[in-house]
Length: 536
Image (cartoon, rainbow, N blue to C red; front, side, top):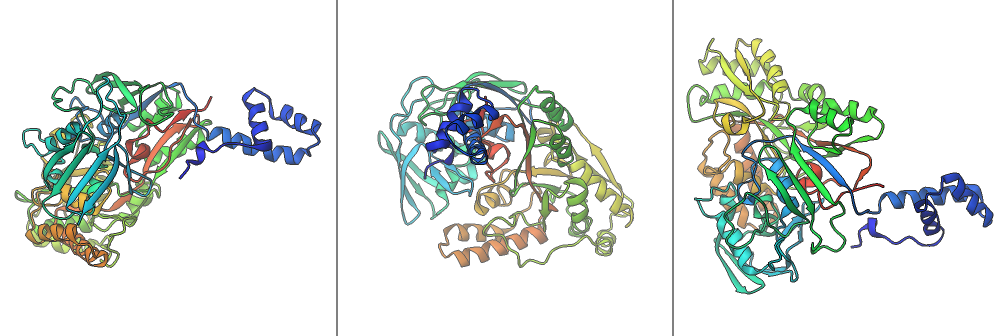
C-alpha cells in the first residue's frame, strides 16, 4: 500500500504547491490563478489542498531535541536489557528487528524479507539483502542467531528470556536464512519478533558503551542517565528515511519541567505528559497533544510473598478502595477507560467483557479489612511520579481507607531510581506497565509464575497451564475463552489492582510532523525517530 504522505501531486494542486514552495503568499497565489481565469473560491480550495499536501510531505534535514519521561544511570543501548521507555525509544533509533508492529499491532516485515512456518512450530526466515550495520558489516544469519540465542542466556539476564525460551533451536540454514524451531506451536512468533528486546545486534557484540546496529540513526554519543545523540544513517536500507539529520534524546522525569521545556522551545517532543498538562499545551500557540489509546496501566502492586500483605482479605480490601471513576475524571481528565483488575484492555481482541465490573465499595472494603486482622497497623504505600500518577492515586485510596479504619502511610519517593530501588521490593507500591502487543506476551512477562516482572510474586499453576495451552490453540474462540479464564484468575487472586487503562499522551511542537498512533506505546510505539520530520 502506498503511503499517502508520498502521493504525487498533479494538475492545479501541483502548480499551487510549486507556488507555495517558492514563497508565494496565499493572496499572490490566488491572483496568479485569477490571471489564468480561475475563480477565487476555486483557487482558494486548491491552495488549501496544496498546503495540506505539503504539510504531509516528509522533508529532510533538521535537528530535534526530545525528552522522555524516565532516565537513570541504568539506561542502556543493549536491546536485551531494556527496561524503560527511554531505552525503547533510544534502541529503536539504532537497531531494527526482523519484524515491526504497525498501527493495528500486526507484524510487518523489516529485516526479514519473508517468514514462513510449518504448523506454527518450525519458522524459516529469509533476511533482507543489502542491509549493513553502521560500521559497514553486512547483515547475515549469524547476527540473527547470535541476537536471539543471547536472549536465552541466563547470564545476560534479559527480561525477554521467558519469551525467547520457547525457541528451542535457532540455526543458520544459509548466509541469509535462519530457522527457528519452537518447543510448542506459537502463531504469535512474528509478533514476538517485533517487540523491543528482539532487535538485532552484530554477531559477538558484548560491549554496549555505544550502539552499532542497522537502524535509521547512528550513535554519536551515549551517556547513561544523561543523553544520547543520534545522527542520520546515510546508508539506511529504507529509501528516503530517516528525514531528520540529528536527534538529541534524554529524560526529564518531572512532568512540569518536561512541559515547560517544550513550551519554551528547548525541546520539540515531550513524551508521556500528565493529562493535567494537556490544557496548558493546547492553550499555547504552536503546540499540540498527541493521544494514543492503548493498554497502558498504572497498577497497585501488593506483594504476596510476605506478611502482612500476603493476606487475601487485605488484598481484596485494597482493590475495593480503588475509586476508578474518580481516578478517571479527576486524575486523568477523561484520558482513560475503566479497568477491572484484569490486564487485557478493551481494545484487545481477547479482552473478556463478561467478567463483572468491580466497583468502588466501602462496605466490601471494610468487610475484608476487618477480616484481615491488620487492625490499626499503618501500611506504607510507595508512590512516585515514575509510575504515572501513582501519588494521586495513592491519595485517593488513602482518603477512602480512612473511612474504613485503615491507615495508609504514603511514601513519596523520587522518580530517579524508583524502578531499581522500590518497584517490586516494597510490600505495597505501584507499577506502570507499557502496552504489550499480545495477551500472550503480557501474561508471559508479568503473570506467569516465573515471569521476570511478576510484580506481586503471584504463582498459580492453573494459570501457567492455561497460558501454555492458549499459545498453541489455533481455534480463536477456544483461545479467547482460555484468555478470559486467565483474566478472571488475575483479577480475583493476584496482588495486582488495575483501576484504569490510560491513554498515552505526548506533546509536541506543531512543526514536528509524521506522528501516528501505534498502541504499543507513546511516541509512535517509541519508534518515532525514523518517521518524523520538521516542517520548514
